[in-house]
Image 1 (cartoon, rainbow, N blue to C red):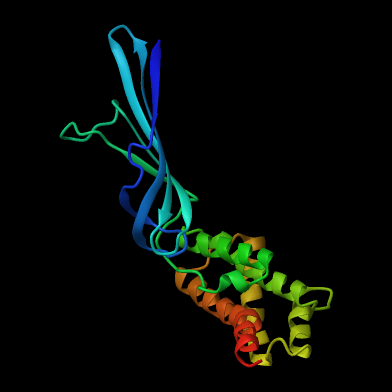
Image 2 (image 1 turned 90 degrees about the horizontal axis):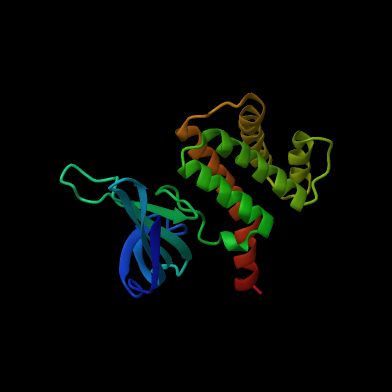
Length: 221
């Protein structure tokens, strides 16, 4: 036995502070739409559990990114002063950390997706997935630039022959390739400092190959 009540837009228009997926920090968000649910269930004689949930579509005031937020609580979870404990979930999930490149939308769509997933793995303290993502970025750049060769070693070297990379850049990518191999095949979790440095190098690669040529092409026509 129990009941449920649904209402809408009780909190629409309110301003809240939550972490943004794009700004990578706490920013002001507007609640654009909200649906509130409350209810109770009878679990036994004279024993009821009351619960509530608020589902919100929110928009960042800094970058206009739209995401989803859920606040939930129930009468079984209370604090030391008997205050209701409220749980917050954000979709997509996020944590504060490294901010993606501002112009990553200039990357090919599949490369942008892999890059953003790699940044997300780094921020969520998933070192193995971050290492695998770094290798996937290198492989995707090689494929997108039509690098030839039977393995990633020869493809990276072919990027040098095509003028996409300098020899020094290729040497660095070979080190990152090994890092990615260790993550993929040996499930090795590299240190955050190593992964952040590797991401630094990857971002320089993405800027040099895609972002800077785009801006230069528009500026120096």
